[in-house]
Length: 109
Length: 116
Image (cartoon, rainbow over all chains, first blue to last red; front, side, top):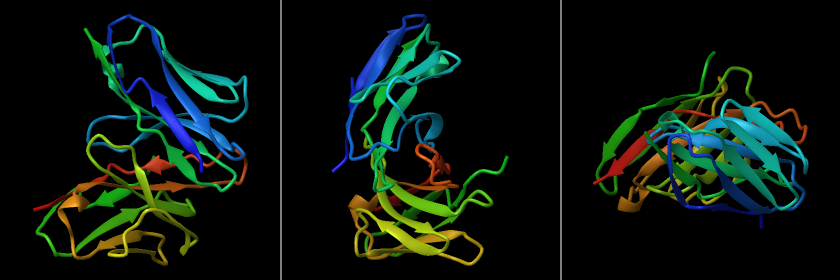
């Protein structure tokens, strides 16, 4: 069974204080690793797809990286508007998407 | 750009009542998914449809059923509602090309069900 573990569960940063979120996974035949952002009471919003170790993708202050066992979402100089829950999900060889429980990021001004 | 449309956005029901949620996927997306998300929880997969046929089933209670219609919209029917069914219900759609990593889900804004 595919598993996704995200850490930390919650992270509080000061504006401008860079950090990383972790997503560890076990999956049978990785077809893709996805990062989503979710604001309270709203649907997850797609950020990135990574599908091979060594791959990196960037979007504004966010950078996602992938190894064979984990992915990191690096947040550089975060702003309060980056506050959200960040969800990691993997798609395995069964084409199913398995989500982690997310990291709740709070960025204080 | 068109997004995934869900209705109603909020729904309040009594125990043992029935509720129906609707989802209109992005045009030309061939797969629809339903997820349930409890407070502070990650989205739990319920069921999916590919080209109007059920393609996969997750942790969907027997009290729940879903279908996809000829116009590709989908409905999730929930009967004999229980307090524990209170949650956000998300619909998502995708246009999977079969390529690894291409199966990006676009989520709707969700329907919040409260069972009293």
